[in-house]
Image (cartoon, rainbow, N blue to C red; front, side):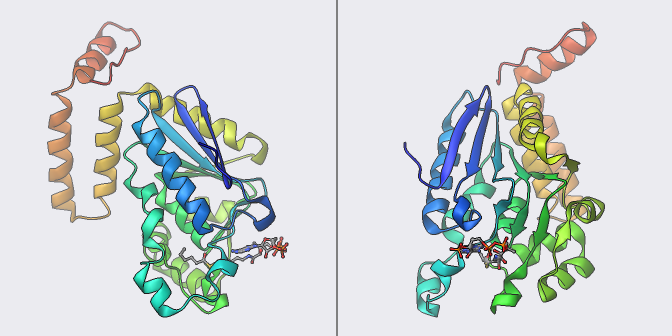
Amino acid sequence: MPYENILVETRGPVGLITLNRPKALNALCAALIRELGLALDAFEADNEIGAIVLTGSEKAFAAGADIKEMATKSYMDVYLADFITHGWEQVTKCRKPVVAAVAGYALGGGCEMAMMCDFILAADTAKFGQPEITIGTIPGAGGTQRLTRAVGKAKAMEMCLTGRMMDAAEAERAGLVSRIIPAADLVDEAIKVAERIAEMSRPVVMLCKESVNAAFETTLTQGVKFERRLFHSTFATEDQKEGMAAFAEKRTPSFKNR
Ligand code: HXC
């Protein structure tokens, strides 16, 4: 289907979604969020796709929710529409891994959207921030929660209360991003990483993602127990048999996603 605010392509087993509102630095308007949800659903349903990369432009991953669209909304507008839960959480509900490739600004809802992805690869130009306080509001798509879990209370509190941005080096030191990549190579490298994930057994990748995500929702004892159950369940797959047989036979496994 034709999209107006995003570009959608496939690169082999990787679905690539590029936020594409250059004039507004990819501000996340309602139409963009709707399109993103549709594109994610389509990749989720596509058996040829094993992982997804979400990226923006060189200047901005996304400079936040669309301030001009939000500016005049009333309390009842946002409450009744459950703004912004609807649509955004599609990123977190996707069972296939979603890699955020962030160059330039990832601010407000842009930072929150990157943090909803499974991990963030950052260009050396990336800048992360939650500047909502400077426009009289607070993060509303999980920023106070996910940033705090990612970088700890001190940095998250300072960033949310002052709007200070973090550059790529600080974000890597703080554990917000998995790696820094030269800006010119960011998307190619993110696709390579996603291709590597797509080579693995799809059901086992999903179980693994589910288990890591459980670490944010449970106690250690419950999380370890949950992991063990999922670990056991991988032994019900043909792919675990194939993976271990291939290791013993010194060959590359051929996973059947079963
Ligand atoms: C709507 C935006 C926008 C945004 C930028 N633009 N960010 N429009 N919503 N979040 C528009 C500008 O109005 C401008 O349009 C064009 O993009 C280029 O932006 P400039 O400001 O001219 O660029 P620059 O001087 O390079 O500054 C870049 C910037 C700045 C530092 C990123 O644009 C900025 O501070 N943006 C807002 C960041 C922010 O506060 N984000 C949080 C939003 S609240 P025109 O038409 O003038 O050329 C939020 C809440 C989330 O995200 C809650 C849950 C979703």
